[in-house]
Length: 436
Image 1: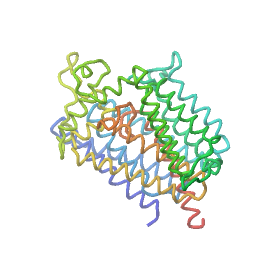
Image 2: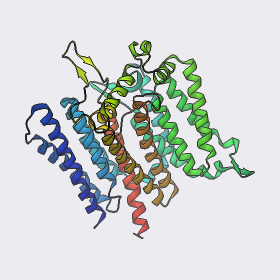
Image 3: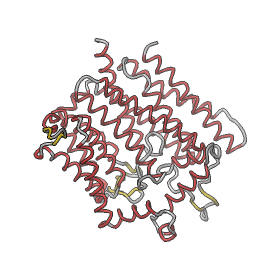
Image 4: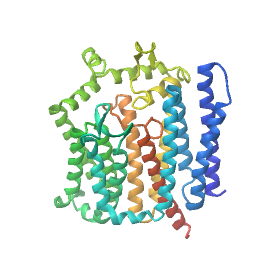
Protein backbone atom coordinates (compact mmCIF):
# COMPACT_ATOMS: atom_id res chain seq x y z
CA UNK A 1 0.00 0.00 0.00
CA UNK A 2 1.36 3.42 -0.94
CA UNK A 3 2.15 6.07 1.65
CA UNK A 4 -0.74 8.29 0.60
CA UNK A 5 -3.24 5.41 0.71
CA UNK A 6 -2.11 4.63 4.26
CA UNK A 7 -2.62 8.28 5.11
CA UNK A 8 -6.12 8.20 3.62
CA UNK A 9 -6.95 5.09 5.64
CA UNK A 10 -5.70 6.80 8.80
CA UNK A 11 -8.05 9.76 8.32
CA UNK A 12 -11.12 7.54 8.61
CA UNK A 13 -10.78 6.73 12.35
CA UNK A 14 -10.03 10.41 13.03
CA UNK A 15 -13.33 11.39 11.40
CA UNK A 16 -15.15 8.57 13.19
CA UNK A 17 -13.78 9.91 16.47
CA UNK A 18 -15.29 13.31 15.67
CA UNK A 19 -18.67 11.72 14.86
CA UNK A 20 -18.71 9.71 18.11
CA UNK A 21 -17.51 12.64 20.19
CA UNK A 22 -20.11 15.06 18.89
CA UNK A 23 -22.80 12.40 19.23
CA UNK A 24 -21.87 11.86 22.90
CA UNK A 25 -21.99 15.61 23.59
CA UNK A 26 -25.35 16.04 21.81
CA UNK A 27 -26.88 13.12 23.70
CA UNK A 28 -25.61 14.56 27.00
CA UNK A 29 -27.04 18.02 26.25
CA UNK A 30 -30.41 17.14 24.69
CA UNK A 31 -31.08 13.44 25.50
CA UNK A 32 -31.56 12.86 21.78
CA UNK A 33 -29.33 11.91 18.89
CA UNK A 34 -29.57 14.01 15.74
CA UNK A 35 -27.83 13.78 12.40
CA UNK A 36 -25.74 16.83 13.33
CA UNK A 37 -22.86 14.69 14.55
CA UNK A 38 -22.72 12.92 11.17
CA UNK A 39 -22.68 16.31 9.46
CA UNK A 40 -19.80 17.51 11.63
CA UNK A 41 -17.87 14.30 10.99
CA UNK A 42 -18.45 14.51 7.24
CA UNK A 43 -17.34 18.16 7.16
CA UNK A 44 -14.23 17.31 9.14
CA UNK A 45 -13.41 14.41 6.83
CA UNK A 46 -13.97 16.64 3.80
CA UNK A 47 -11.48 19.22 5.09
CA UNK A 48 -8.91 16.54 5.84
CA UNK A 49 -9.43 15.00 2.40
CA UNK A 50 -8.75 18.37 0.77
CA UNK A 51 -5.44 18.59 2.63
CA UNK A 52 -4.75 14.95 1.75
CA UNK A 53 -5.18 15.71 -1.94
CA UNK A 54 -2.60 18.49 -1.69
CA UNK A 55 -0.20 16.01 -0.10
CA UNK A 56 -0.98 13.35 -2.68
CA UNK A 57 -0.14 15.71 -5.53
CA UNK A 58 2.78 17.67 -4.05
CA UNK A 59 4.39 15.32 -1.49
CA UNK A 60 3.71 11.73 -2.56
CA UNK A 61 6.56 10.31 -0.45
CA UNK A 62 5.91 12.21 2.79
CA UNK A 63 5.33 10.46 6.11
CA UNK A 64 1.89 8.77 5.90
CA UNK A 65 1.08 8.87 9.63
CA UNK A 66 1.86 12.43 10.68
CA UNK A 67 -1.23 14.13 9.25
CA UNK A 68 -3.72 11.49 10.55
CA UNK A 69 -2.21 11.91 14.04
CA UNK A 70 -2.72 15.67 13.79
CA UNK A 71 -6.29 15.08 12.57
CA UNK A 72 -7.01 12.98 15.68
CA UNK A 73 -5.72 15.73 17.97
CA UNK A 74 -7.67 18.43 16.12
CA UNK A 75 -10.82 16.28 16.30
CA UNK A 76 -10.42 15.83 20.06
CA UNK A 77 -9.98 19.58 20.44
CA UNK A 78 -13.12 20.41 18.45
CA UNK A 79 -15.22 17.95 20.47
CA UNK A 80 -13.98 19.17 23.86
CA UNK A 81 -14.37 22.84 22.93
CA UNK A 82 -17.87 22.17 21.56
CA UNK A 83 -18.75 20.52 24.86
CA UNK A 84 -17.62 23.72 26.63
CA UNK A 85 -19.02 26.35 24.25
CA UNK A 86 -20.59 25.77 20.83
CA UNK A 87 -19.72 29.30 19.67
CA UNK A 88 -16.05 28.82 20.47
CA UNK A 89 -16.13 25.46 18.67
CA UNK A 90 -17.42 27.14 15.51
CA UNK A 91 -14.64 29.72 15.76
CA UNK A 92 -12.09 26.95 16.29
CA UNK A 93 -13.43 25.13 13.23
CA UNK A 94 -13.01 28.32 11.21
CA UNK A 95 -9.43 28.64 12.39
CA UNK A 96 -8.85 25.00 11.51
CA UNK A 97 -9.93 25.81 7.95
CA UNK A 98 -7.57 28.81 7.90
CA UNK A 99 -4.82 26.59 9.28
CA UNK A 100 -5.35 24.00 6.57
CA UNK A 101 -5.14 26.81 4.03
CA UNK A 102 -1.79 27.91 5.52
CA UNK A 103 -0.76 24.23 5.53
CA UNK A 104 -1.48 23.94 1.79
CA UNK A 105 0.17 27.27 0.95
CA UNK A 106 3.32 26.26 2.82
CA UNK A 107 3.53 22.98 0.92
CA UNK A 108 2.93 24.59 -2.48
CA UNK A 109 5.12 27.67 -1.97
CA UNK A 110 8.03 26.00 -0.15
CA UNK A 111 8.60 22.87 -2.16
CA UNK A 112 12.33 23.61 -1.80
CA UNK A 113 12.22 24.59 1.86
CA UNK A 114 16.04 24.78 1.99
CA UNK A 115 15.78 28.17 0.29
CA UNK A 116 14.85 29.50 3.75
CA UNK A 117 18.54 29.28 4.67
CA UNK A 118 19.30 32.22 2.40
CA UNK A 119 17.00 34.49 4.40
CA UNK A 120 17.91 33.34 7.91
CA UNK A 121 18.85 36.77 9.26
CA UNK A 122 15.72 38.37 7.82
CA UNK A 123 13.67 35.56 9.37
CA UNK A 124 15.42 36.02 12.72
CA UNK A 125 14.80 39.77 12.72
CA UNK A 126 11.14 39.30 11.80
CA UNK A 127 10.75 36.71 14.58
CA UNK A 128 12.21 39.04 17.20
CA UNK A 129 9.91 41.80 16.00
CA UNK A 130 6.94 39.46 16.40
CA UNK A 131 7.99 38.75 19.98
CA UNK A 132 8.04 42.41 20.99
CA UNK A 133 4.87 43.45 19.16
CA UNK A 134 2.59 42.61 22.14
CA UNK A 135 4.47 45.23 24.18
CA UNK A 136 3.81 47.93 21.58
CA UNK A 137 1.25 50.63 22.47
CA UNK A 138 -2.22 50.52 20.91
CA UNK A 139 -1.93 47.03 19.39
CA UNK A 140 -0.41 45.21 22.39
CA UNK A 141 -2.80 43.14 24.50
CA UNK A 142 -2.53 41.08 27.66
CA UNK A 143 -3.60 37.44 27.50
CA UNK A 144 -4.12 35.92 30.95
CA UNK A 145 -1.63 38.34 32.47
CA UNK A 146 1.10 37.78 29.88
CA UNK A 147 1.88 40.09 26.96
CA UNK A 148 1.38 37.55 24.20
CA UNK A 149 -1.28 39.05 21.96
CA UNK A 150 -1.85 41.92 19.58
CA UNK A 151 -5.35 43.19 18.98
CA UNK A 152 -6.36 43.86 15.38
CA UNK A 153 -9.97 44.95 15.50
CA UNK A 154 -12.00 42.26 17.27
CA UNK A 155 -9.30 39.61 16.74
CA UNK A 156 -6.52 38.95 19.26
CA UNK A 157 -3.52 37.36 17.59
CA UNK A 158 -0.50 35.78 19.29
CA UNK A 159 2.59 36.46 17.14
CA UNK A 160 4.85 34.34 19.38
CA UNK A 161 3.27 31.25 17.84
CA UNK A 162 4.86 32.16 14.50
CA UNK A 163 8.03 33.59 16.01
CA UNK A 164 8.92 30.14 17.30
CA UNK A 165 8.94 28.80 13.72
CA UNK A 166 11.20 31.59 12.48
CA UNK A 167 13.62 31.20 15.37
CA UNK A 168 13.92 27.45 14.77
CA UNK A 169 14.57 28.05 11.05
CA UNK A 170 17.31 30.56 11.93
CA UNK A 171 18.93 28.32 14.54
CA UNK A 172 18.87 25.28 12.24
CA UNK A 173 20.62 27.28 9.53
CA UNK A 174 23.10 28.94 11.89
CA UNK A 175 24.06 25.73 13.70
CA UNK A 176 24.54 23.92 10.42
CA UNK A 177 27.38 26.32 9.66
CA UNK A 178 28.88 26.61 13.16
CA UNK A 179 28.40 23.15 14.66
CA UNK A 180 32.07 22.20 14.13
CA UNK A 181 33.24 25.39 15.86
CA UNK A 182 31.03 24.74 18.88
CA UNK A 183 32.31 21.24 19.58
CA UNK A 184 35.59 22.49 21.03
CA UNK A 185 38.30 20.23 22.37
CA UNK A 186 38.28 17.24 24.68
CA UNK A 187 40.08 17.46 28.03
CA UNK A 188 40.26 14.31 30.17
CA UNK A 189 37.45 12.81 28.13
CA UNK A 190 35.15 15.81 28.64
CA UNK A 191 34.16 18.07 25.73
CA UNK A 192 35.01 21.67 26.57
CA UNK A 193 33.51 24.24 24.18
CA UNK A 194 35.54 27.19 22.99
CA UNK A 195 34.56 30.22 25.05
CA UNK A 196 34.53 32.53 22.05
CA UNK A 197 31.82 30.43 20.44
CA UNK A 198 29.48 30.48 23.45
CA UNK A 199 28.04 33.80 22.29
CA UNK A 200 24.94 32.27 20.63
CA UNK A 201 24.14 30.26 23.77
CA UNK A 202 24.40 33.35 25.97
CA UNK A 203 22.47 35.49 23.47
CA UNK A 204 19.53 33.08 23.28
CA UNK A 205 19.62 32.68 27.06
CA UNK A 206 19.44 36.44 27.40
CA UNK A 207 16.49 36.55 25.01
CA UNK A 208 14.70 33.87 27.05
CA UNK A 209 15.25 35.86 30.24
CA UNK A 210 14.03 39.01 28.49
CA UNK A 211 10.86 37.21 27.48
CA UNK A 212 10.41 36.06 31.07
CA UNK A 213 10.43 39.65 32.33
CA UNK A 214 9.08 41.71 29.43
CA UNK A 215 6.21 39.60 28.13
CA UNK A 216 5.64 37.90 31.50
CA UNK A 217 5.43 34.36 30.22
CA UNK A 218 7.57 31.63 31.75
CA UNK A 219 6.11 28.98 29.43
CA UNK A 220 7.11 30.67 26.18
CA UNK A 221 10.53 31.47 27.61
CA UNK A 222 11.08 27.83 28.57
CA UNK A 223 9.76 26.59 25.23
CA UNK A 224 12.06 28.81 23.13
CA UNK A 225 15.16 28.14 25.20
CA UNK A 226 14.43 24.41 25.48
CA UNK A 227 14.04 24.16 21.72
CA UNK A 228 17.39 25.90 21.29
CA UNK A 229 19.12 23.49 23.68
CA UNK A 230 17.61 20.51 21.86
CA UNK A 231 18.95 21.84 18.56
CA UNK A 232 22.33 22.52 20.12
CA UNK A 233 22.56 18.95 21.36
CA UNK A 234 21.54 17.48 17.99
CA UNK A 235 24.06 19.72 16.19
CA UNK A 236 27.05 19.02 18.45
CA UNK A 237 26.26 15.70 20.16
CA UNK A 238 27.70 17.28 23.32
CA UNK A 239 25.65 16.91 26.51
CA UNK A 240 27.58 19.75 28.13
CA UNK A 241 25.58 22.32 26.15
CA UNK A 242 22.06 21.39 27.31
CA UNK A 243 23.38 20.86 30.86
CA UNK A 244 25.03 24.28 30.91
CA UNK A 245 21.98 25.86 29.30
CA UNK A 246 19.63 24.23 31.78
CA UNK A 247 21.75 25.52 34.67
CA UNK A 248 21.74 29.02 33.17
CA UNK A 249 17.96 28.98 32.75
CA UNK A 250 17.43 27.71 36.31
CA UNK A 251 19.72 30.42 37.71
CA UNK A 252 18.01 33.14 35.68
CA UNK A 253 14.53 31.94 36.65
CA UNK A 254 15.53 31.85 40.33
CA UNK A 255 16.96 35.37 40.16
CA UNK A 256 13.90 36.87 38.52
CA UNK A 257 11.53 34.91 40.77
CA UNK A 258 13.30 36.55 43.71
CA UNK A 259 13.42 40.06 42.27
CA UNK A 260 10.47 40.48 39.87
CA UNK A 261 7.02 40.55 41.46
CA UNK A 262 4.86 38.83 38.85
CA UNK A 263 7.39 36.00 38.37
CA UNK A 264 7.58 35.45 42.12
CA UNK A 265 3.79 35.40 42.41
CA UNK A 266 3.58 32.68 39.77
CA UNK A 267 6.20 30.60 41.59
CA UNK A 268 4.42 31.04 44.93
CA UNK A 269 1.11 29.93 43.41
CA UNK A 270 2.84 26.83 42.03
CA UNK A 271 4.53 25.91 45.31
CA UNK A 272 1.49 26.35 47.57
CA UNK A 273 -1.66 26.38 45.42
CA UNK A 274 -3.93 25.56 48.37
CA UNK A 275 -2.71 28.40 50.56
CA UNK A 276 -5.84 30.38 51.39
CA UNK A 277 -4.16 33.75 50.91
CA UNK A 278 -2.93 32.80 47.43
CA UNK A 279 -6.16 30.99 46.58
CA UNK A 280 -8.29 34.10 47.18
CA UNK A 281 -5.87 36.60 45.61
CA UNK A 282 -6.77 37.90 42.10
CA UNK A 283 -4.42 36.16 39.70
CA UNK A 284 -3.32 33.81 42.48
CA UNK A 285 -3.49 30.04 42.76
CA UNK A 286 -7.25 29.56 42.23
CA UNK A 287 -6.84 28.36 38.65
CA UNK A 288 -4.17 25.79 39.47
CA UNK A 289 -5.96 24.53 42.57
CA UNK A 290 -9.23 24.06 40.69
CA UNK A 291 -7.34 22.23 37.95
CA UNK A 292 -5.94 19.76 40.48
CA UNK A 293 -9.39 19.27 42.04
CA UNK A 294 -10.90 18.57 38.60
CA UNK A 295 -8.26 16.00 37.72
CA UNK A 296 -8.62 14.23 41.05
CA UNK A 297 -12.39 14.12 40.51
CA UNK A 298 -11.90 12.37 37.17
CA UNK A 299 -10.33 9.31 38.72
CA UNK A 300 -9.22 6.44 36.51
CA UNK A 301 -12.14 6.26 34.05
CA UNK A 302 -13.53 9.79 34.24
CA UNK A 303 -16.95 11.28 34.88
CA UNK A 304 -18.06 10.91 31.25
CA UNK A 305 -18.18 13.29 28.32
CA UNK A 306 -20.07 16.46 29.23
CA UNK A 307 -19.96 15.78 32.98
CA UNK A 308 -17.10 18.09 34.01
CA UNK A 309 -18.38 20.84 36.29
CA UNK A 310 -16.89 23.92 34.63
CA UNK A 311 -19.29 26.55 35.99
CA UNK A 312 -22.30 26.69 38.29
CA UNK A 313 -25.29 29.01 38.32
CA UNK A 314 -26.43 31.36 35.59
CA UNK A 315 -25.22 34.84 34.66
CA UNK A 316 -24.79 37.31 36.28
CA UNK A 317 -24.35 35.15 39.40
CA UNK A 318 -22.47 32.40 37.60
CA UNK A 319 -19.36 31.03 39.32
CA UNK A 320 -16.47 29.83 37.14
CA UNK A 321 -14.98 26.66 38.62
CA UNK A 322 -12.40 26.09 35.86
CA UNK A 323 -11.11 29.44 34.55
CA UNK A 324 -9.94 29.35 30.91
CA UNK A 325 -11.16 25.77 30.55
CA UNK A 326 -11.02 25.98 26.74
CA UNK A 327 -7.37 27.13 26.72
CA UNK A 328 -5.09 26.76 29.75
CA UNK A 329 -7.08 24.05 31.53
CA UNK A 330 -8.42 22.00 28.64
CA UNK A 331 -6.22 19.09 29.72
CA UNK A 332 -7.91 19.19 33.14
CA UNK A 333 -11.30 18.93 31.40
CA UNK A 334 -10.07 15.89 29.46
CA UNK A 335 -8.83 14.22 32.65
CA UNK A 336 -12.08 14.98 34.49
CA UNK A 337 -14.30 13.57 31.75
CA UNK A 338 -12.14 10.75 30.37
CA UNK A 339 -10.10 9.98 33.44
CA UNK A 340 -6.49 8.92 33.74
CA UNK A 341 -7.01 6.40 30.94
CA UNK A 342 -8.29 9.00 28.47
CA UNK A 343 -5.57 11.47 29.40
CA UNK A 344 -2.90 8.79 28.97
CA UNK A 345 -4.27 7.96 25.51
CA UNK A 346 -4.15 11.64 24.55
CA UNK A 347 -0.53 11.89 25.68
CA UNK A 348 0.23 8.69 23.77
CA UNK A 349 -1.02 10.38 20.58
CA UNK A 350 1.33 13.28 21.28
CA UNK A 351 4.18 10.82 21.81
CA UNK A 352 3.39 9.30 18.42
CA UNK A 353 3.49 12.79 16.90
CA UNK A 354 6.91 13.45 18.43
CA UNK A 355 8.16 10.01 17.36
CA UNK A 356 7.19 10.66 13.74
CA UNK A 357 8.85 14.07 13.84
CA UNK A 358 12.10 12.68 15.24
CA UNK A 359 12.00 9.82 12.72
CA UNK A 360 11.83 12.43 9.97
CA UNK A 361 14.88 14.14 11.48
CA UNK A 362 16.78 10.83 11.54
CA UNK A 363 15.94 10.06 7.91
CA UNK A 364 16.94 13.51 6.63
CA UNK A 365 20.21 13.49 4.69
CA UNK A 366 21.44 17.10 4.96
CA UNK A 367 22.23 18.90 8.22
CA UNK A 368 19.76 21.76 7.78
CA UNK A 369 16.84 19.40 7.19
CA UNK A 370 17.85 17.26 10.16
CA UNK A 371 18.15 20.23 12.50
CA UNK A 372 14.94 21.84 11.21
CA UNK A 373 12.86 18.70 11.76
CA UNK A 374 14.39 18.05 15.19
CA UNK A 375 13.90 21.66 16.28
CA UNK A 376 10.27 21.91 15.16
CA UNK A 377 9.45 18.58 16.81
CA UNK A 378 11.20 19.60 20.02
CA UNK A 379 9.20 22.85 20.19
CA UNK A 380 5.90 20.96 19.85
CA UNK A 381 7.00 18.42 22.49
CA UNK A 382 8.06 21.17 24.87
CA UNK A 383 4.78 22.99 24.33
CA UNK A 384 2.89 19.86 25.39
CA UNK A 385 5.18 19.43 28.39
CA UNK A 386 4.84 23.05 29.49
CA UNK A 387 1.04 23.10 29.51
CA UNK A 388 0.49 19.56 30.82
CA UNK A 389 3.26 20.06 33.38
CA UNK A 390 1.67 23.33 34.49
CA UNK A 391 -1.82 21.89 34.80
CA UNK A 392 -0.53 18.92 36.81
CA UNK A 393 1.76 21.10 39.02
CA UNK A 394 5.02 19.70 37.71
CA UNK A 395 6.09 23.24 36.73
CA UNK A 396 4.45 26.67 37.22
CA UNK A 397 1.24 27.07 35.26
CA UNK A 398 1.56 29.21 32.12
CA UNK A 399 -0.66 30.29 29.25
CA UNK A 400 0.83 28.06 26.53
CA UNK A 401 -1.80 26.22 24.48
CA UNK A 402 -2.06 22.45 24.13
CA UNK A 403 -1.22 21.97 20.41
CA UNK A 404 -4.27 21.31 18.18
CA UNK A 405 -6.53 20.75 21.22
CA UNK A 406 -6.74 24.07 23.06
CA UNK A 407 -8.87 26.89 21.69
CA UNK A 408 -6.74 29.43 19.84
CA UNK A 409 -6.51 30.39 16.20
CA UNK A 410 -2.86 31.46 16.23
CA UNK A 411 -1.80 28.15 17.75
CA UNK A 412 -3.79 26.05 15.27
CA UNK A 413 -2.47 27.90 12.22
CA UNK A 414 1.16 27.97 13.42
CA UNK A 415 1.22 24.30 14.38
CA UNK A 416 -0.26 23.27 11.03
CA UNK A 417 2.54 25.22 9.34
CA UNK A 418 5.00 23.25 11.49
CA UNK A 419 3.41 19.99 10.31
CA UNK A 420 3.66 21.17 6.70
CA UNK A 421 7.39 21.87 7.13
CA UNK A 422 7.92 18.43 8.68
CA UNK A 423 6.14 16.79 5.76
CA UNK A 424 8.28 18.76 3.30
CA UNK A 425 11.42 17.45 5.01
CA UNK A 426 9.97 13.95 5.11
CA UNK A 427 9.12 13.89 1.42
CA UNK A 428 12.64 14.89 0.39
CA UNK A 429 14.27 12.46 2.83
CA UNK A 430 12.14 9.45 1.82
CA UNK A 431 12.49 10.26 -1.88
CA UNK A 432 16.28 10.47 -1.59
CA UNK A 433 16.37 7.26 0.47
CA UNK A 434 14.71 5.31 -2.32
CA UNK A 435 16.95 6.98 -4.93
CA UNK A 436 14.28 9.23 -6.44
